[in-house]
Length: 482
Image 1 (tube, one colour):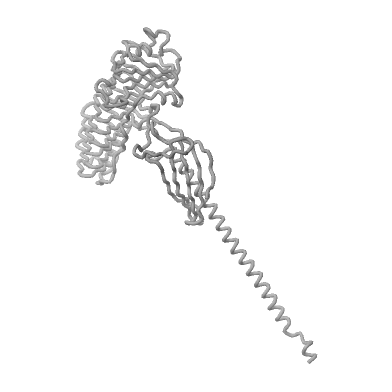
Image 2 (image 1 turned 45 degrees about the vertical axis):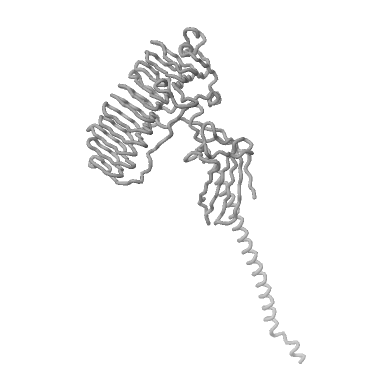
């Protein structure tokens, strides 16, 4: 018995089992800690991804407010998108709430007047962005921004609401390439005679297009209705598109493709072939601007206009602009009087005298409630650089325009030198009859008449207080919220 008690055989097995058990416990603990750390790391990564996705949503909101893709149109905006990040995808959901004041205490409350206009727009916005990784671990970022409106020039070199009449030898050049576009917003485009060169596109969102003369369009002709080409010297470098009508190439050539909804004729003259489709959508369009006079908009423009002269007499306004008569030595021409607005608060006709020469040391706006008629020979010379000349008969504050009392005519002996760029606007008829030198700028009218041998170079010209396109943003704070 004593010998058996002293026998140590089997102890090694017991020790081995005890050591194995301890190692198993340690391994289990290490594995559990590793799994927990891995899960915690994954959760941390997801939380970080969610925060990053939420911040991406804020950046998307900043961009949306700066240049909204379809215009700001209501009291709130929402944005949703995915962020491509591995190993799992992330998403953000953004809500932008607009306010009528800079403090963010008075929400916008008038959806009936949306979209926002030059007189009704938000002053601040609260942006909330919820980010999620793999649909989990939501994190919310919030920012508050004070908004300043951004105004830009109108689209198109020539914009006509109802009708556009082209006569012999009209040349329209682009500003940045072939961007000298023509819009006929609520009528048909007809070119029945003359030699025309259009370095841009022709858009007819509510009517048809008929070209029966030698016309070279460097871009595309897109109409809602039928498109008819009927002259051997018609050349369309781009496409011809009819949203709801047909295409008929009786004579002429199309270098691009043809798109039609109903019928096609002369498709052999369409180099890119013809394709039937009724899903093109409306041709590019824009509202016809109702430009009214708001002195505050001109005074707060960037850079501001500083010299405001108001007249009830067209003769007095003319003398001031020309620096003659009663205003000799104190008028605008040839004097450094700052960026100037000459407002004629009357329905008379502003007419320069024969052989007048007006030297622009600064930008000049001639704004009238009546007619503007450059019928006599006159020269408009910029001293250096580019001086902007606005020639406008403004839309009435109430009621409809008085036509033809508000017609604007640029006569055939009117000369603009290379330092002057202008915009000519009327809610009635604009006549551009100049056949002496090229006019650079834009022409906008209810009806537009282009005279013989008229040359035009498109250059966008901003009208203060018109065409709200987005907002500059001053960020008050960015923070994470629950």
